[in-house]
Length: 546
Image 1: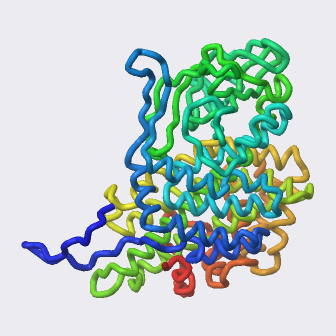
Image 2: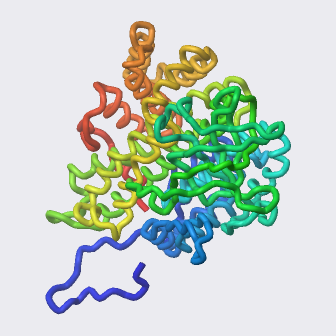
Image 3: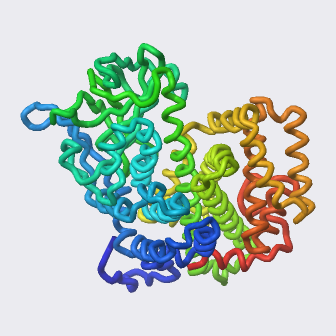
């Protein structure tokens, strides 16, 4: 970021009609939807901390860190200058600064804090952090979610839990016993299987009780600089879950070799790697042959986070588009006053607010201690993961187009978010995997179907168009809607119905009306901004204007 005052009077022309960069604003206090959701979903106690975090992360300095972290990608150093293997991933200082910001705020530890509403507070903080740089959210998410798996191995949890829960960032590569804090990664997929992890070929050879030796490869290892990894491998009793530390108990490096870093479309600040286990020590968690079931305790949480970081990016894209339109003049007036631009900006804001309401409601279900809330968390996370991650790419493009050519260059933030947008639809199960998971839950777990029904019935009678939409979903499910080939259509409809229900209860009336008119009444069109005439758009635009 250029610190000095720019010169607008150039020898050949004067630079005018330029939009000031959006800097030094509070991401929490400027977001009425997030503020209301924090209170409504049970984490009002975190308001002061959320406001302080929002101010810190919205500062010009923090925004500059996000830009630098996204620009300077990690570098792999496989060997030192003597030819000794070190497998060291070097990150830009901006990445480390943002990691420290998130971990010191407790994003990873809030769900385990024992405070009611811990997941909701976690969601709010990560939702804000991702608006500065999404890449750091992946390792922070996995670190916190790993506890759900490690708790199933009391001895491992007793050793590693305090390090994982520490609100400290220690990036040094050294034995975990010498560190004040630890981060945890994940390595599940392999070349031949991808999402079909049951096709994994990595072998786990038993050594002593729960101790094994792993030999094989992993095609995607997220955050390879982590202190330990949750992984899947084939034990004598079938596919099983293991914890593999970077360092062995005797202080030697474990046999985990980084083959190369992925050259990714987006998520550039975060490292993803191909690795090999060459006799790496690992501790089994759960029973042999129950690896998928064991690790799903983590995956369900990371699916929620995949959706919530997309909601955060939606918010940032909408805010950037509205900010630009509020300062840029074209054809004699501000863009935000142009009749055809207003429904585009309003539609982006509606989408972002609806996504925020959905992910925050699911976060509350993760906090719940009733069977009903657990059931809704189970199916709500899969629905939100499918839908919100799929809506972000087109929204980020539409926001970019609002800035014209200025949005397409790398100096601004929207190009980075556009490149980032597709990744969360792929991670933690692709769209098809999540759609089939919803279908499976509805067919095999009656409690999830009932929890979903109760959620949707809460808004019945508030709008005839909503009622008709719900009735059509129910009729379709009774007829042929439970076929695999129709799973995506069903999950789309369920997501829209959930968002509409939440908007009716908690959103501004103008936004609920625009959502139903543009999405339920005759179905969505192919692009944002194709809203019917006669809607009240100004109250919607005001929600994204800084």
